[in-house]
Amino acid sequence: MQVVATLSPQGERVIVASDLPLYDVLQVYRMRWGIECTFSGMKSRGLGLEDTHMTAPDRIGRLFLLLSLAYAWMVRIGAWRADALPIAVKAHGRRAMSLAQYGWDLPCDALRWQRPLFQTFLALLMTAFPSPSQPESESVRY
Image 1 (spheres, rainbow, N blue to C red):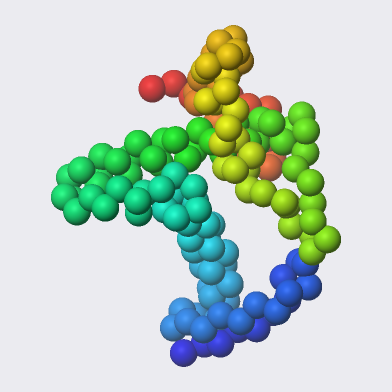
Image 2 (image 1 turned 120 degrees about the vertical axis):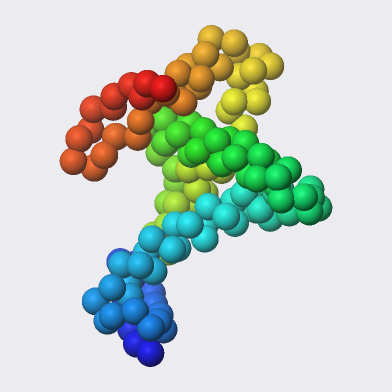
């Protein structure tokens, strides 16, 4: 068992226990944390996956696929919105809300009241997130 203690960029103490090699512990934890936040947003703090009370695996699988697409779309719209109007940063140094939360209400409002804006949001589904080393976005073809 490896126990790693470090400080986050915000100065918070992070302690992780794992059976992974010492140098892999924090890298894997960073990847896992992103997944945990995504599941939280899809379950109890966002899209309500747990509220369905479904038990049939095939139905849960189809719903999970649909919610994954919706969540990715919300994050993409939130990133697009944050480029124009950045998310406020709280005193502890983190954003006041996630990109998914920031992109949550815009598609619904646009579908009802602003059809041209909704078309923009649909186009965002086919646009990849820019990588940190390449600021230009490119279209995704299926």
